[in-house]
Length: 378
Image 1: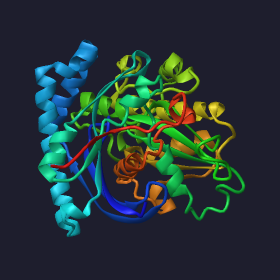
Image 2: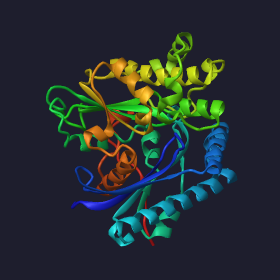
Image 3: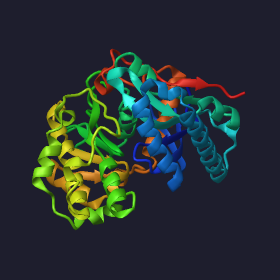
């Protein structure tokens, strides 16, 4: 298959908003990067999504048929349509030039142990409204086969890492790519090994930005610790951190994936805004460091993607905890804010080619599995 133009859409568990990105790829190599855009959720949509997560947690599988969630799914799809049209206009690309859209949707519920995962967003409606083929529902096939359904981005990390200039990577030792969204996940890559064999290991490490965002919203009314300034003024509370790290979810070996609501703020509830933010950042960093014992070999360097790389306090904690070079994505020549959207464009092309998007070593699937549902344009 010749490389094609693909567009990826990602709205993560941090509830920041929607990212959209264009790439040219054959689903194995990335030939070129196109424009990308982001659209923040308005406060009302963010609140509606938080309410829907809580409702979905109560309803379980029945959430798929809930009228409130169905209506929210349509609203969400309309927002995705808007950002696609804006991005294509900026790029001066006609819809018929785009081979496929990878539409992740918004995760409301993720319980792989119950073989249940729910990402809202109507792929068929999006395909019809844009006149572009859409691949969506990327996680369900993996979960149905007993996999964790996450993380799905490691194969894209592997594709990106092929072109890195770091001398150590793939020659003197393995690389770790850490994505810090609402939940954090690691991709361990050894470029000297077969990526469909032992060359990739991936799993969720624990909280990312989610707890910090919830804490800041509760204590300051601002839904994030911008640049880590609040946590930077605080002190880590050692007993609270120890209690957080005692969670069985942190100690469990991979494969594992975690829900946005898997952790709560009870252990920091009595702390000041500053100390709570510092302690929660330390929790994210410590849980990443704890994940190293589950990797085949210690990474010689880490590349950090996702919104968490903007938190300077968290990045400094990661450097102290990991003891090896820790780079933001941009230092590797990657587009940190666009990377997950790019990944779903890449995975959509892999779907078209019948290539796997999840592996036993990334999700615990029984074998390399294709994934996603294709909605054809009219």
